[in-house]
Image 1 (cartoon, rainbow, N blue to C red):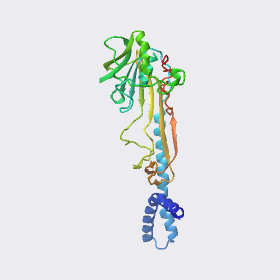
Image 2: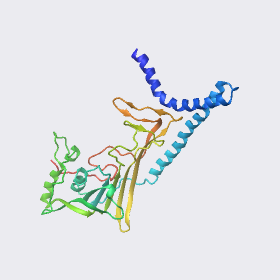
Image 3: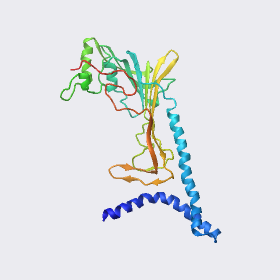
Image 4: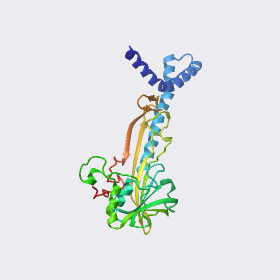
Length: 317
């Protein structure tokens, strides 16, 4: 009985918001037509009253979908290049959205860049504090390998464990930390240097733009609340690699990932739903898609989608 009654009732509840959008103006126009035209059959008046709401219902999504497609194409229009293989021994600056990464710490990418000898130094900065014309900050940390002496400092070295590919075999957990590689460097008279800098200019600038919003105020396809945008486009993700030349920064690669959808025709209001996952109240959409260059799953020994160098740290036991 619950199934026989509940399923049709739930179906009606889902249809009600969308149907209300068309029934309300249709009935209003119908009442006006009845007052001004007594001799016209009621069914004909009802059909005439439905023309305008339906025309608007089909016209708005077609117009909005055209704008959505143009906005999406504009986001990926300048994409070019592929993850480059960088010459070893360059300095690297990594700019990423505030709240992401490990600003002020030497994390896994920092350690793999340095300990694999791909980069001679690494500094990470918040993207909103970086200026292409004047790369100067209040404070940043530049990590590098240098001679053993007063400059040695492992305080900001985050614990990061090696992968089985780096060790060369499967071992019981936990695997050795990447910092064990410093013992080998010590034999060569080298240690980790951690320097406070204001000038973060480097040979290579790598930019990760996730349009990250910790308050989740941007458009999303999931979650509770209202999403009544006529242009359902989630914040794009973009990766760029620049190389410093005598004439300035030259972009080697730009790749953008965009997730969006097209509005359904006719325009329809879908109520929010919450069970084990939540969906917002939104204009019904279709054809959710991801275009451009999606960010691949993370591989520890590769800086995915940014550079093609092998960052494996060898010699760990």
